[in-house]
Length: 592
Image 1: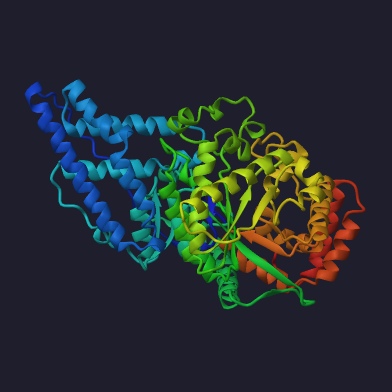
Image 2: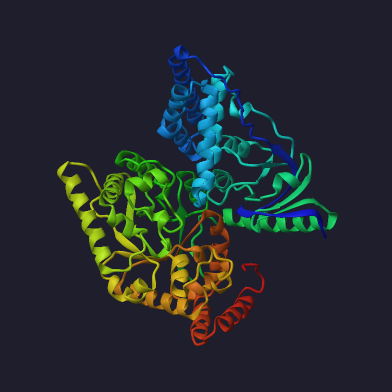
């Protein structure tokens, strides 16, 4: 079994697709540079303003066609860009200061913005570059007097098309995803948080992004196999590989059909224990899939998207509407809003850094520096704005709040004090809020883990962020290839930490949920259940497999397995023991 070439990228949305390459080229308009006399410059600025206004109207038209669940809200970011000083004002200033035509001013400004984005380390910010290009090209089309192209009428795909592109603007990704002939997305750029990835997951289309040599090795019409779970693209596969891919595709389709049939069935273990399955979300576009997969609520609503890459903090009103939309979309189900977890690998844009005066990008060791609750308590107005917006939104749904990266009692006390001050202020103004909002904290540091027995009496619930807890416990950066092999959820120190956290929550009588990557990994499900954890929060794409795993697990046997595992010392011993035990438990299933 072989292929002409195997390309490796990032598995952004699971599934197998077998089809032909449809290469979509995002055309960048390169205009001519013209020098204009001083007397024409004012009129040239006005021409640019007309083009910007026309583009905004066209974007509004697109937003009307796309419901909130169809990524219409993401298009609001395009409108904000049109009014952004870094784009609109900079292009106008270039016309006046350099005496150039509007087309060249837009092109020059766009190239400067793209260069700035490419230089940033944060992948979330870099992945917004396709939006910049799309908006800029829309402005250029209006300057040229072209009739605005209706996206859905742009072109029609042949049957069994796998869309291949450098990158996809969100509007094009949505319309392509709705095309009946689209089987998968494969892009040269992007990452797990790119719009292409979000759209693909929402539409349950297989997707591989970040395949760096894609366009060098794939031409229109090439036969492709895409594995969205492994992040692999097989170009011109032979018959043996096609048979293997079709077999795996049938297995996945059967699993997916079973998951959808069982979506609203309870996650009950073999011995009758109920496990709660919650969703991790960042954008409202992900809510629809959560509901389809039967999520009981949102266990982790990430809010950093409101700040990352922005040139100013989002206003209270903007945040209020973002939170309200998610609460209303969840139709009364509980939504757990995590306050800003900025810093570390989630850095704000440079203009916002200056506003915050945090300069988090300059820190020698940002993972141990000014991040999460520390940053919020260091910038109280930013924190208060978010708390006020969340409190106001609580009147429109079922909300609970949690604070990330708590490691000191003083941090928790200060955060709760700010929350109560905001509540009192809104109450005086006569603004409606929920009468009671549960307040919890994330346990992500060894410091919090080992005083969890005391912290449990300070909050309404615990949420365990296993990604950071493992990194901080083992002093390992898993993004560092030189030490990533040491990253193990089954290290005895990690297991003992989880054991202590669970016992602390049980003794205090508060709920506990795991929302890190372990929660969505079926190979860790039995282990977590055996530790006494009965609430898991994950991306919607993992819910079906995890639920099936729960339905085929005996909690009693899982507890016996973990009691025995905790008596062993080395990570290798524990991993080998659990692997053997799980093979015996799931002899007829492929959960790991």
